[in-house]
Figure 1 (cartoon, each protein chain N blue to C red):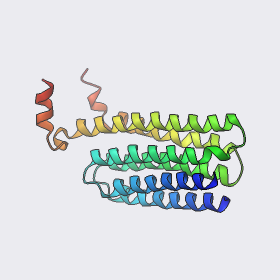
Figure 2: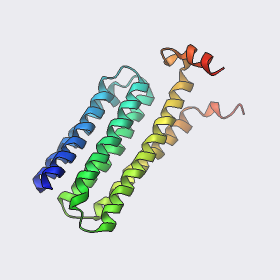
Figure 3: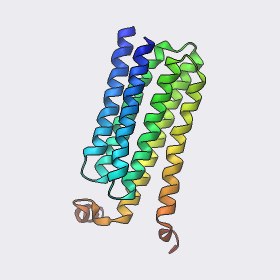
Figure 4: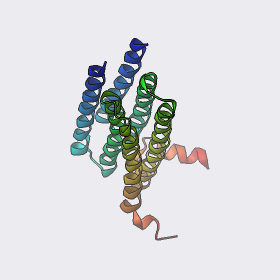
Length: 105
Length: 89
């Protein structure tokens, strides 16, 4: 069981590193939003699974899961806010901004 | 066992500090706000690990705070950064 925890928490930490690397290396804001939200949420989820077996009581384990769900919802809404803001600020930021609007009409 | 939690928490702290590079270099303010988002998520992870390493379950409740603060900061940034978008309605 301990080794499973090592594996899960290690993978979670790996996803955090990948997420931060994505934040630093990606060319424009939209890809960075993608990197941050996806990688960190998955990293936190794996971390949570790794931590669950070593919690003392059931309520504490449920609290851990609740924290993860809260972070999921929080970072999802935050990434949409940022994406709308960047799109409003510079509509041509998207490489193919004009074609997407045509498809919607 | 607890040494493992400490090392992972330290590693996450390093990724947190790597986020500062994005703050320094970020071309537009939205990138800088993304680093705030990174602080929120990584802060929660570090606090959860510390709660496990130091056997103090109270830290799990503390972990809720940065998760919320990141979103509130993002909402304040978006509202504050373009007030003119609201006026024309």
